[in-house]
Length: 302
Length: 336
Image (cartoon, rainbow over all chains, first blue to last red; front, side):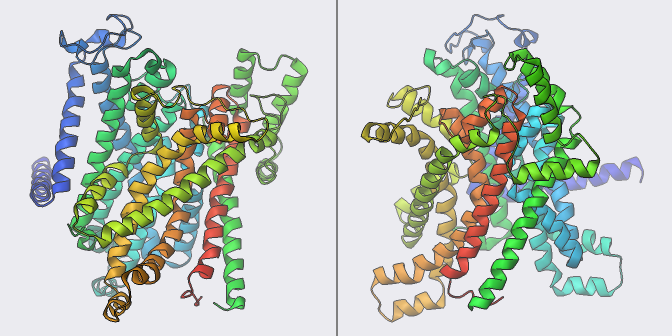
């Protein structure tokens, strides 16, 4: 494939994406709210590109200052170690979303692959794969993550964190994709495709895949949510990347590291919590909106 | 279901239970072995830094025990089976955070608190959520139903521990009803005042679980189920027969939505447990969560591993019990 055709392909798929976003936006209130909210949050996160270099040093700003409109550093107040809450929040958004997106990239694709294979092949392969998946489902995810991150405490960084969270977050997508594939396999167009004698992987990728893609997108969105939540859970226990700004580490330092509420420093405690809830609600609204679009039976009669 | 059929189903389900447990424990073992750091050296280094164990002989004994627990002595098969054995007997040697109390005793001391909290929170949220969801969908389109739905969609994706932080902010900072630092609970004997302080200690952690799961997931799923049940022929038939509304709701609707929700509860157990553990740590509630938090801050892998293994048992046992209970609850399940 030469460069220009690749470019054309990219452009057409981008166009398709744009069009489906526009359709979703005009047809679903949930999508509208979720999309607007997450766009605003991502925009706030992108502001972090302009973070002044002194942000990564302590006590460059006066400590424990309440929010004031005097400068952009002070707009959300400062922390007990003299850092701007605004820049910390903005960096935290980007870092947390990166962890979420990386996890979604790894885990939901592993889930997709296992679900496709198990659902399509059936029989012994399905049984073995599902036994494996179910065993992961009964391992409560956070305790396992806690033991793993205890071991990796000294070396942990964003990709490693995403990899670790992926270990516990692929089974649900796998189960779901498998269920969809099993119901698809009984349809006539699939048996026709098999009867024409094309190889199995082509049946999977050309005939089954297009019907699974929507659910795959939903799974990916939910994995982003799960990963951000898991990172916060680990942070509360002091097991995240404590030297970086993420939503979890902001919560850790403000409520557990330096119990700020005792001293009334609410402006350090509140932003990460509010941002977390906003991210969760907006992504969840988007994923339900897509689900309702694909499966109109789910649509609520309002 | 005939008694013979049930026996066969129960036996199959039990076998699956054991197989998944062995599998799950093997997975944790495999993951621990895959980790690029030497767990034992890591632990011993942390212990010596903190000066928890002074006696060099005790330290050496601990070290060799740790090597055994992590399955690092003998041939690979021996290592694996020793790990399985210690997981099945929950024998993870002495704990480090309360040396030399065995991990098993330590867990046994904290476990009842977690079970109490979880039982209370799960029962309340399951009942309240299901009933609210049913009521809301019976009055589909009313203002109350719409408001509840809006709340549910907002609450559902939020983890318990984020809700816990919100509750602390509201009920300990804005309106100081509860102490900010959580509850320091010490129960020597059971009398009225200790029960009162116990309930106070449980209130906020339980509330953060109840709010999220009752008004979130249980509400939403019960609502969807009710809407589906209401369109079934037998409900329409009952309405046409002119049966009293309360009877229709109780016999025809409620029973049919509660059954699938029992299965859903089984599937949700793992998530509820995981979330509750961190919620406990936030509130300094003396359950497994707090123990895990302390284990982490002292680098006590044996205790942490013990809790992980125990939670594997807990979650799969809960699912097993609900599965076995199901045919007894649902007279329609006679096949298989």
